[in-house]
Length: 220
Image (cartoon, rainbow, N blue to C red):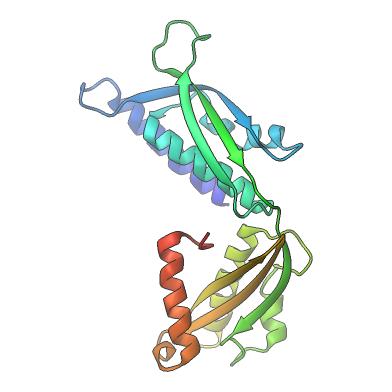
């Protein structure tokens, strides 16, 4: 679903860039992606990466937006597979093999994938009332011993919020993640919007949540 939304958003951007590209010399430079090359990718994933990013190839868009979109898409691909601290360096270069088109480019994406993390433990802080812990665990498909999937952590947050909403409570849920070698421990903490500032757990969770918003969902 997230990929479909990203593709739809990109198509709108491509359409706008195509319209604007010839209107004025002051418009941002647009490029046409002919190829994407990867280096440093996890073994056996080059084909999957190519399929995941194929919607970029053959489209015209602003260079800055292209780099941002490529980094976002490939980072999501890697974190979905447990490479939670992957770092990317996307760059464009002229596509000299495609005729005389000055706007045709090749996109090079270099990766430093780091460790592939497994889930060591999952627990909940400030979430035991009025929902039983068994129901909390059932709401999360984020299981111990499995690959630490960033998308599953995102889904878990949404499911927990929905579960509490059914009980008449509106809470904000934030994942606090601890990395240990190749293992990940996650504590899903809640902040009651009415009572969060009155308890130590609520105050600490609110502080952590602000930090997550500043540094990104995983805080890494």
